[in-house]
Image: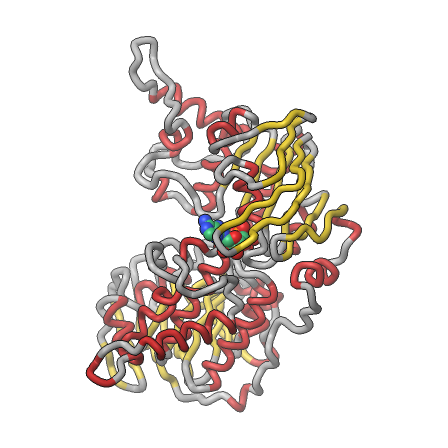
Length: 495
Ligand SMILES: Nc1ncnc2c1ncn2[C@@H]1O[C@H](COP(=O)(O)OP(=O)(O)OP(=O)(O)O)[C@@H](O)[C@H]1O
Ligand SMILES: [Mg+2]
């Protein structure tokens, strides 16, 4: 059994964890939930030796242990898969798995074939097959995750920490992940599982613990607590309605702000659709629907073989994301790391960075006051949990970093804003606030596109929905026609 007792961890100006005691039995899946910035990742990093606790102790089978880094933790049988992956992108799966402890031949050379074979059988034991020889950058996120898990299990691993493993996975991949977790569980591995998707927790966890503002507020069997009760414990208040009320379909203009007359890229059919002034357009689909690819081709990040686009009725050329932005089309990518987080800058700079034009005062200098007002507004509205926006963005929790990037795009006031999986990793309370802000922008006449794999989310916020499958648009639903079953039906190939 693994125990953490009276753990306290402070960062300058923040008590990230205050007197937390939690335990994990072998074969147990223990979910850890709480709002963005509650302390979940920090607690797990203390357990894995990334951070040293200021107070408190860790026990394994009754004996105290003091891991000073992840390697020492691994020797104690504790492995972590971080919220942000730590694979080396240009190395392949087995080079990553054995990084820093390469298997050697008798002559002291790196034994690639042995590493390849061992990695292969570890993945096979998880019932996962993936290309072993490709650089991991070319694998899907799910596959990368399995490489990380294989890496953990190939060494003595009795306790595994998964920090938001599902945030970037599609529902099918999540099922596969759960299969792997159950398999490990049956081998006696205990898991801490962090997620903002509460339905998942009810599916996989035995026990749930809630952190709030660095405090431990609840631990109990998952069956002892309903989802609503859990949310109330997390946010300390009742969250009533996640989605703002929808506008009547007649109330939305039929005028297109963006009209895609013809768009084709390598793996798609000819696509055509409109984004109307003042509407939220949802884009739904399953794995391989090519939703992201379509929009990357639209904004000019990827090559399109054919592209005819009208902006406010006028033909426009979009040769790159920068050109798109200049013409008023903003795109927030799904991957936080690639989405231009400036880690060495403050929270404030990260929020205002695309808005310098608007912030210029007389003589063309950027006005400090305007900058700080803009930033303060979003920090407050989006509940970005920090003492000051002058802090480095790298000091924020994962979800709060994501909020800051969303704020940057909301603040640009482009005519068309495209959000790809905007609320991944965002807690329930802040999600509701983001939905409200999207609605407000739409009310101001912007065209908003939300690509989302979260069905309740698209159903809850979209005025109109495009359902995609294998690079073609299979259905367009609006008004009363919008419901999860219809979307699934078309997404799965129904006619
Ligand atoms: N390296 C750091 N330096 C300073 N403060 C930090 C650092 N890491 C985390 N914090 C602070 O500690 C608190 C807890 O952060 P933590 O990352 O543990 O939250 P979390 O529960 O994992 O949130 P999320 O759901 O957003 O991932 C936050 O206030 C955060 O800003
Ligand atoms: Mg976290």
